[in-house]
Image (cartoon, rainbow, N blue to C red; front, side, top):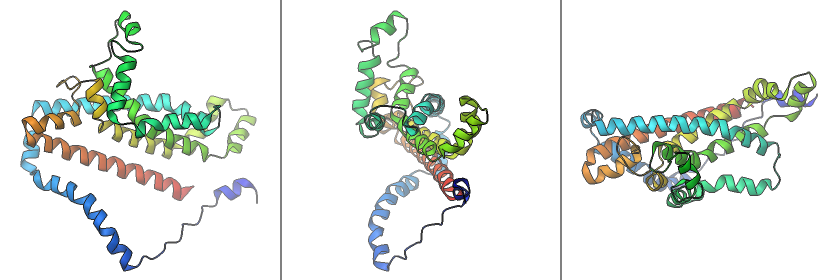
Length: 276
């Protein structure tokens, strides 16, 4: 039996250990703690007020801006992050561990630090601010700043997932395709991408969900201007001062979208594990 035949055989699912009643009881406090705030939010928001607030121009603007910017930022993450993820999976970088740590850094940085860092890089007085100003490009406190923030904080989710998907592909398959006359772009397009599509799709969904919920870095680098840079999280922040019902409506929408995104990503990745 050769290596290819071995890879085609699906791994046996891990045996499940039956938990005692004590462990189930001990798990309840954390489960309840995680559930109660979400349930309370939905109980506090009536369906009638939800529908009524969805007609508010400020709510529609925040939803529209969030959806538009996150779609653009997710596309940028996919296009720019895929080569980096593939190079990481194939060990094409020196100091790979250092680079891997750099990729993970936005995940643990405080949002305020990320916002200040982007402002110091692309703001008017930032590292590239003068050069950009001479070209007539102003990034800070514009919709472009919202997109850059989302890319910065959400890209690691896609890169890590894509890199894991690429690393699970048997390199002998890619080498065999190359020996059969396929060019590198053809191997990547017709072999590598199809074999890792679930990891790429799952990472894309996770990145989109993270970008959708970004707040701290956005308010520092992009500001909070309704109809221009005010995304749903920023509108929720203002809603606590002006109209709590609007804040509750946007919070419910964000929870539903985030829950749906996580559910899709988990199903995709679990299906890929079961079929691998």
